[in-house]
Image 1 (cartoon, one colour):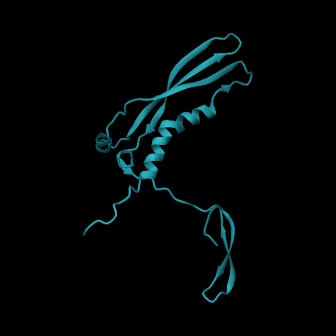
Image 2 (cartoon, helix red, strand yellow; image 1 turned 180 degrees about the horizontal axis):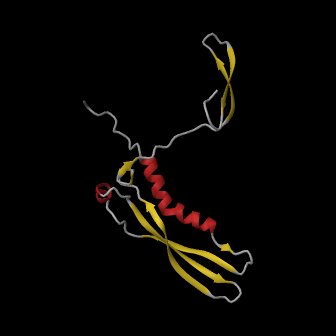
Image 3 (tube, one colour; image 1 turned 90 degrees about the vertical axis):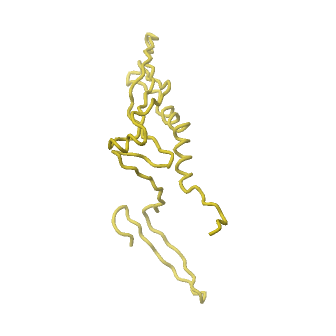
Length: 151
């Protein structure tokens, strides 16, 4: 069968979003949260930067060892004593950050998973107007609760 239209990359949205989060989003989250002051206002904790280190396992090794495909993330903080002007900078292990494979999947405990985005309607009451083929209008209502079945 001759291919008329090429197949689109169906996971491009996820892979681009993840790349954007690594390139810009993660740093922006830290910048939004810091600096943090103590209650007395004498000490301040500043975000300096972060570094993703080399993953412990490759994709194949993570699958084979029932492990996670992730990389350790180290964050550098600076503690400022506002009274004395003393500075202390330290790199801190922040956790293991899940890495996306080239296929757009994540490997958790050796199992490869694909995250599928899903649109969910917000809870509340929805009213709608329907017109049938004869032009007759009718009103409808749908209630979407926080939990349970839609009514």
